[in-house]
Amino acid sequence: MQNWPGLIKAYKKWLPVTEKTPVISLKEGATPLLLLESISRRIGKGVKVYAKYDGLNPTGSFKDRGMTMAISKAKEEGCEAVICASTGNTSASAAAYARRGGMKAFVLIPDGYVAQGKLAQALVYGAEVLAIRGNFDQALEIVQEASKNYPLTLVNSVNPYRLQGQKTASFEIIDCLGDAPDLLCIPMGNAGNISAYWMGFKEYYKANISKKLPKMIGFQAKNSAPLVENKIIENPETIATAIRIGNPVNKQKAIKAKIDSKGDFYTVSDDEIVQAYKILGKEEGIFCEPASAASVAGLLKIKDKVLAESTIVCVLTGNGLKDPECAINNNDALFYNDLNPNIKEIVKIMGF
Ligand code: AN7
View 1 (cartoon, rainbow, N blue to C red):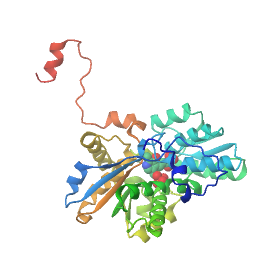
View 2 (view 1 turned 90 degrees about the vertical axis):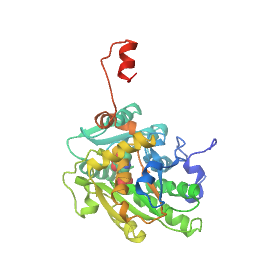
View 3 (view 1 turned 120 degrees about the vertical axis):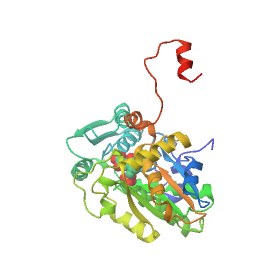
C-alpha cells in the first residue's frame, strides 16, 4: 500500500490512542503474507502454509509493532527515558523508536549472547547499552526493579501497550486471507507475541470480521523451553539466541491462549531450527533469523497432526540479517575463495 500510515493510524479504532497521542512511527506493519510452496508441499494434504514475514518491519523484527505503541504512549505520558532487557531485537526497536521520539533508551543485554546485527542497531540508534554477565532473565529482573524506583518507562512486553501494538499482526492476516487461519505457528520467548496474536484474533472474531479462531501453536527451543516443560529453566541455551529465555513473563497469558484456542506447545531442537532456516533460505527465498525458523521447524515436526486442507500461518518474527554469524556457519552453499582473477579458472569451477 503506497500510503500506508503505520499501524497506529491504520488501526487506531482498535488501539488505546486518542487524538492527543503523539504518534511515533517508522511506518511499521503491513508486512507481507507469503505463500510457502515448498513448505506446503512438504506438509501435503492440500494444506496451504503462509509466512507472516515480520522481519520486514523497520528495524527488522515484530517488536516494532509493539514499540510504536509503547513509545508513543510513553511520550504522551511525558516520559524522558525508557529501559528494557533484551536478547537483541527489543533493544534495537526500543532504541530506534525512543530516539525518534526524543527520549533516552537504556538497554540491558546478556553479554556475548546478542546477535551482531542487533547489537549494531542498538549502538547506531543511540541507545545506552549495558551488557551484563548474566542471562536475559536476570536482566529483566533488574529493569523491572529499576523502572519501579526511577523515572524510567519499562518497554518490555510486560508493558501492556506492547501487546496492543503487536495484536495488529492478526488483523493484517485476517484482512489478507479474509478469515483467520486454522493454525498459527509462532516461536515463544517471553510469550508476549503469542498472547498479542491471540488478543487480535479474538477481537476480530468478536466483531464478526472473522468467522473462526485459529489454534495457537507455540514453539520453544529444546533447552530453553520453560513453557513446554512447565518449569523455570535456570540456564537456557539455544542457537536461537532471541528466544534464549528461561522464565517468560507472559507465561499465564500464553497458557490461556493455548487452552482457549485448543492449541499446543512443542519444542524444536537446534538442528531442526537450522534445517528449517536453510529450507526457507534456499527454497523459498526468505532469510529469517533462527528464532523465527522455529515456527516452520515446529510445523514440519508436527505435520502428521495437521488436518487436510488447513490454512496455516507461520510467524517469521525477525530478519535473517540480524544474525550473520548464524548464516555464515549454517548453510549448504558452495563458496570458493582465494581464487585467481582468471576467467579460465573461474569457468572451470562453474563446470564449463
Ligand atoms: C526474532 O528482543 O525477547 O515470545 O528481548 O526476537 O514475544 O518474547 C525477543 C523475542 C521471537 C519471542 N522471535 O517473542 C528480546 C526478545 C524473535 C525474537 C521472539 C523474540 P516473545
